[in-house]
Image 1 (cartoon, one colour):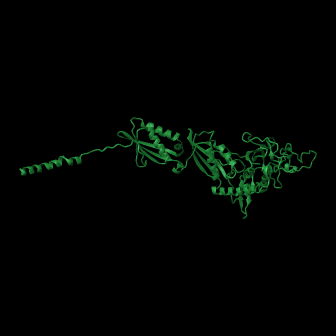
Image 2 (cartoon, rainbow, N blue to C red):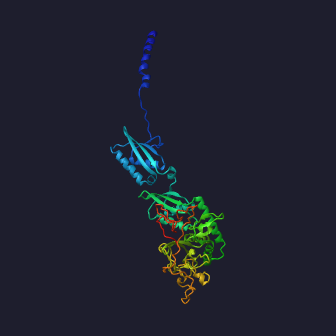
Image 3 (tube, rainbow, N blue to C red):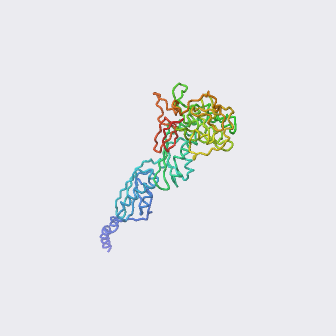
Length: 482
C-alpha cells in the first residue's frame, strides 16, 4: 500500500510542475493603478496627459515663461482636425499672450497618434533669454510706471522690460513721460543719445513694453559726472546768503560766474590735452564751466532744487532756433521766466531776461503755452539791483534792451545818437545770429557723433551735433540753438 501511494506521488509531482505554478510564472499579465490626470514632469524628458486642447495651450504658455525649449504632452483628442486646431491655437498664443509675443521667435508642433491619444512635441525658439524673461517687471499703474522710469534714469540703465496690466496708449505715453522726467531730473540728464519703447502684442489689456536707452558713455562714468556737478551745486546753494526772491537772483548770478556760453565746445585740461565738454548738462555748466542754453537751464534747475525754490525747464525756440530756459515760482506765488544763458555775458551779468511774464517773454521766445503754467505776475523783477543798464543787458546781440515793457532803459531816448548796438537783424549787412557751435574737428579725437541730449525718434535715430535739441523720443531736430 505504501509503495502504491509513493508511486502515485511520483507521477503527480511532474504533472503539477507543468500545469501549476510554473505556468503562472510564464503567463503575461498587466498591473493597473489609478493616477492623476495631469502630473507635472520635466518637459525636457517626460510628458503629461491632458484631455483638453485649451489646457495644453496653457501648459505651453507656462513652459515659455520658464524659458524651456521643449515640451512633450499626451492629448486625448477624438476629432480628426487636431493639426488645424493646434496650429491655430499656437498662432493665437504667439500673437495675443504678452510674454510669448515678447520672448518667442517660433514654435513648432508635431503630433503622433498612439492608440487612444496623441503625443505632441513642441520645439520653442526664443529671441529673449530665460534671464530676460525672468527679469520682466510687473506694473499695474501709471504711477508705478513713472517710478520705474525714474529708477532707470537715476541709474543710467540701458534696457528694462515691463509687464503692464491695464495698458492703454494714453496712460502709458512713453515719449511724453520719459521726456518730462528727463528734464525734471537734471542730476540724471547725462549722455542720453536716444530712447525708444517697443510694445507687444499690438492689442490687449496686458502688454510688455521694452525700453532701450542709448548713452554716449558708461553708467559709471555718467554717475561720476553727476556726482561731481551735484557736489558743486550743493556748495553754491549752501553758501548762498540771500532768501526769497533775492536768493533766486543770487543763484542766477552764481551760475553766470561759473559758466560761460559754450562757443568752442571744448576746454583744456591741466595736461593741455583737448577734452570735450558736456554743454547740455549740469556737469558742463558747473564742472567744465561751458554750456549752451540747455546746460544753463539744467544747472539753474538743480541749484533751485537744492535751495528749495520751485523751478522747471522750458523747451522752446528763440527765433528759429531751439532754446531752453527756466520758469521759477517766486514769493508772490506766480511763475516767471528766467533765461540765464542770455543774461550771462563774458564781461558782466545782465538781467534782461529775469522775472519776465508771458507777454514780455513772448517778444523774443516761443513755447507751447499749453504745456507750461501761465506767467501773469508783475513783480518778478522786484529783487533785481537798481542798475538800469544791467536790468536791460543781455548776451544776445540781436535783442534790443529798450523792448522790455515797463522797464526804464538808458537806450530809450531817441535823441541819443551814440548807441553801442549792432545793426538791426533786418539789415542785409548785419552779421548772422550766432548759432550752436559744432564739435571741434580735432584730428586726434573725432567729435562725438551724437548730441547727448538731442531729440530722438522711437527708432533710435541719432541727431546731428550741429544743433542743440531735446532728448525727446518723439522726433528729430536739426535747428541750431541760439
